Image 1: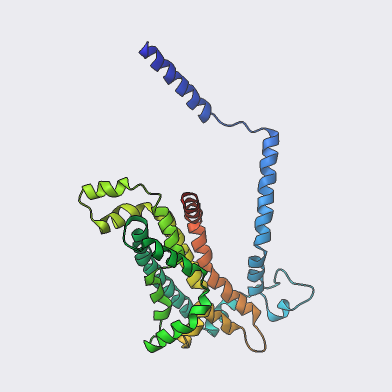
Image 2: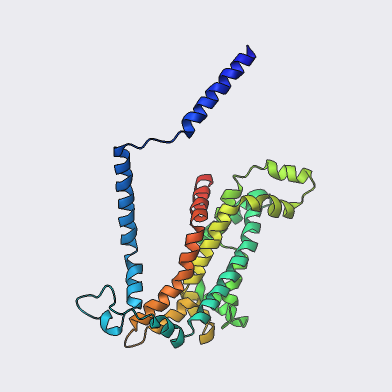
Length: 301
């Protein structure tokens, strides 16, 4: 009886597997529906790419074609030399290297500070934990512009003006938004893993770095991508704390292409396209992880 039941169950599972693995039949209506969906998505993508395509077209134009009427969409003779002129007029490569240094410094700072702070709130017990957590969340409601004057006075007394310390040091003390994401994700990880690790002799630091952090890749990916975008595009803080031309990041360096009485739009667009290329490359490779990380944090939080 048991053998007959097992044989019947095996036959049913085999039939279901064969049915699920069989090629799906596409009808004419389904093919037309898919074609319309892909056509709509393609048109929408092209609409959103119009600014980027216009920047690329402008970067290859001469000054006469930029201000010509009717509009010249495709330049008659593309001037690829505009990109070389943009690099030769200002040290654009140095500006980008400065931004990369700031990105690396802030990313390292957040990777060190945020998991430690989040682990304390998510796993440890200590007096005043709820009050400190509310104070940490309340900092999200404080506009960053309010802190500029006291922070500038602090860094000025410490002799850190015209250095990268004011732009990197805050990351080693955490960011409330990243800490909140990490806390919410850590709380969804079963505590049984911590107890099993402690039974095996693991300490607090070992549990954090060997057990929890490998499971926290989604929020860590979101944190790294957001840190790159925020640091690369930051204009306000570098212009306040830095005054040496050779230490400016690319966000400030692009402003030099805008003169007092005019703008060389072809060189400006060429420099802008080069500066956003790392952002596009990062989004291209991290898109799957970024969307998955945000979805995981949103669902589990």
